[in-house]
Image (cartoon, rainbow, N blue to C red; front, side, top):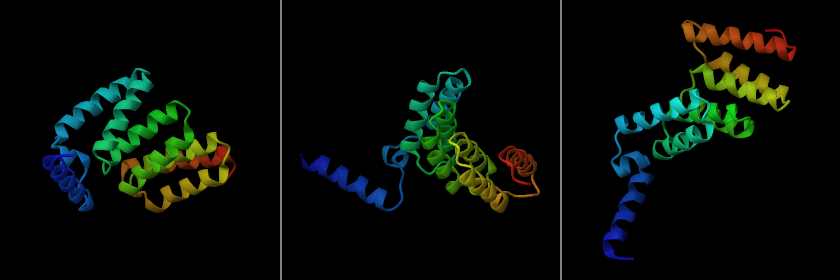
Length: 156
């Protein structure tokens, strides 16, 4: 390995150690990533799940701190009935944006699809704890959570 390559690797390692994303290290812009996201979302909407998944995996690799990209990856995994992976992706999304009820709700759906009512209810409980009550999104997803609880057989 030549000295230039060694220096680049050392600089990248230092940047990662200080919390940088691959996007930042490689100089990729948010606009470029959003263009990839738009393409992936188009694939998702038209049922081209394998193509969408590749793009969403690219996005979380380059910007692992973006909750929207993790959510999109979870959604395509859920659509492909890969519920375990979807739960993990939704978990990352939720961790990065705790007040967003969508990942918690869809993780509950995945747990339910796997027959795991206990963890489905736990995901819905997290939604109740962290989801804002005074927003339209919060009210919508609290109502969806109550409906899912009824399906599970629990009282809202």
